[in-house]
Length: 298
Image 1: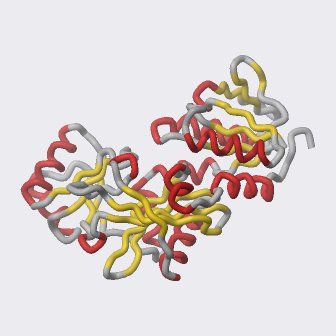
Image 2: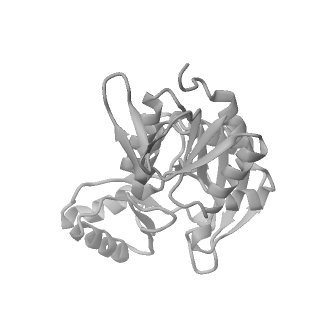
Image 3: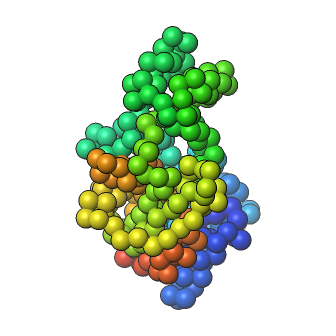
């Protein structure tokens, strides 16, 4: 099988592992920078060019689309889908998961636990206090909708600080979410890695001292963890509701049960493979093998 990994950087750990895992299983692996793909849309023959050559004979793709490239990257994935080429992450699921507000609405509608969240479009000064109070008051977490890897996430310790941060974001015309702070989580969260509806690995991420964000990119540490039955079912249901065949579900352990903080459509492999010693990349290749449905030309 010929499998294309859509990635902008061949040196990234996740990209390298996917290429290695595919080659070890006897597949022809190719790397395509989705931002350098040219899409040609015409009746009956959608096709793609990369570096001036038409992309041919690809059986499946594994998207590794960064948040900043969501719009164009999802268009490339959609073009492959139009060519009847299997994508490990569907284009619409990719777009859905990147919209933090929409994702939370979908999860809440499905009865999945989430931190209490408020969203307002340019609230007036007198309304800002109400927004903060609606999610239980300070301390609270303020998140930019476009943020990733912990960037654009701020913990406001008190009402005055929260109000100042919200006002600053509003002046920048930035969309944001205001969420309750789950104190009992203790600066930790759980990353549950799901492939094809099955949990293939889970780790606990602990924020470094003086930091509340547990992201490994922010200096957090990772360790192996055994999930409870409720944590397992919550993570699987969250990935399913967002339509993701590959997902990194981030959970907070709260006094009212597991709460989904975010569902990632391009979760990194380095931390989870290091903590669990599981060949996650190999699990992804196996998923592609099971689901590759239409070969070009058939």
